[in-house]
Image 1: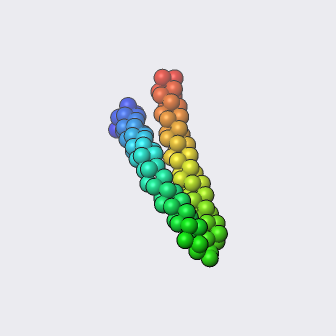
Image 2: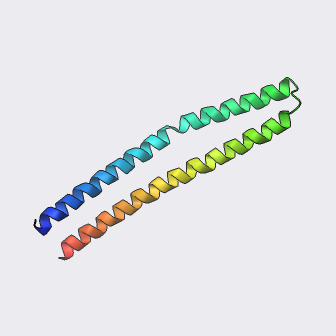
Length: 103
């Protein structure tokens, strides 16, 4: 196999990986409405707990707040991880193009 074939094969693999990461990032961001719906549901639960004078309403509020905060942190971390991976793939592609032009 010649070097040109290997370079084309690597380029196709990188482009495929880039497309998969872009779709993954888009799908991840499109699922944001699910997180917002859960937050709205938690808010409704807290309001109902205080409205009906549930004894442990404060404890329930703290627990639900912790769940919301943790899920938000995890959601942003995953979003950042996908973005960084996509950026790394794009940088590798630029490096390979630069090396290809240099040769």
